[in-house]
Length: 204
Image 1: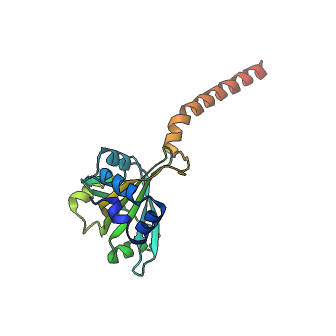
Image 2 (image 1 turned 90 degrees about the horizontal axis):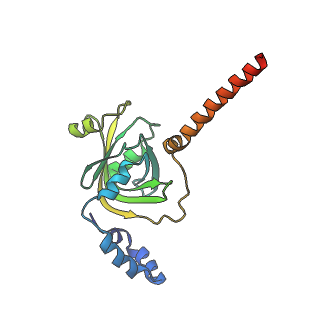
Image 3 (image 1 turned 45 degrees about the horizontal axis):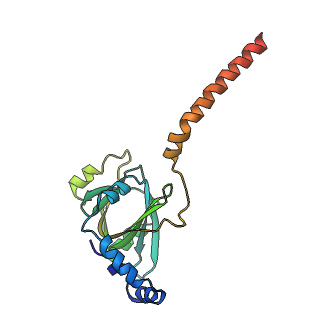
């Protein structure tokens, strides 16, 4: 993988950092944060996500951001620097698909709102129909009850763990069910017992 600072902190961005006195700090820090492939922290984080944001670019330079979601773990790490997931039937606008035909570069945000964590991924993406994609990869991603129309593959170029500041605290539904579910079940059981007792007293 490439150094995230070398890839993103260029031109006007670098000049602004120099003016603000942060350029050298970032150049030094990102040399130590760059690795050749996705590590255990990144792999585990990606596998636990149930959604991500994907930014692509139109052929005349407009950015476009799309949300992709699925069951937790729907994004698979299929190589040292490669991610893949199924692409399902949507609203048939084909904006991302069309953008990738002209420009393969993309940016992804993987968010963990509950723990205030954010992984940024710069990569090169391809979107192929199931019939055109690697058969082994199609089989590996084929566990969903809804068949995918296409396979999205992202070759990771650079990554960055972003500052957790200002990330709001949001709790995913499955986490809430795990924490609150037993309490709700207990309250429901107590409520049924109380209703039975009230009915018994009235009957007496």
